[in-house]
Image (cartoon, rainbow, N blue to C red; front, side):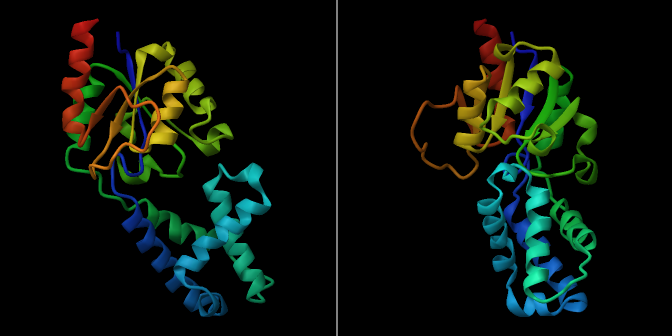
Length: 230
């Protein structure tokens, strides 16, 4: 019996990368006005890639994308010769724009219907803010890697979700777009899995999800069929 459903966010409920690129451009513009030596040295993409350098130096913090962004900005400021730098102001520009996403058309109606039958929660490696996005009313709670100190596919995020839901792992279905983070991770934690494959990619290998869908419109028939089979 299915009692709860957990959802990944980025690229499952909305398309994230065009939004991130726009947020990086707005941040670049903000820096041009206030700290021009940074954008003179670095493009938006090069500024993002500094996060990889920070991750290599602090692999134990790799799960915290907010911290990585801030540290990359601090690193850019130091290299540009700024001793004082408003990292919180810079990150806020990025963060607000990063959350200016547009959920896919079927997302809210589907979640509203599912919420009448199941407990719903979100599990994300990113730092999306459902309050800013306007979907927080649909979930019992939202967890991300920063909250737990570990990112999917680590089982900790899934185990904490099961604990908070007070539901056994085999009674939870996880929905996500990433084969490794969402499908492999959730399956190892004992969840059922549904792969959201909006771009009709080939499966990369390894154990497949229990079901595959293109949009969330296809999810309810899958759940109904599972419940009818018992």
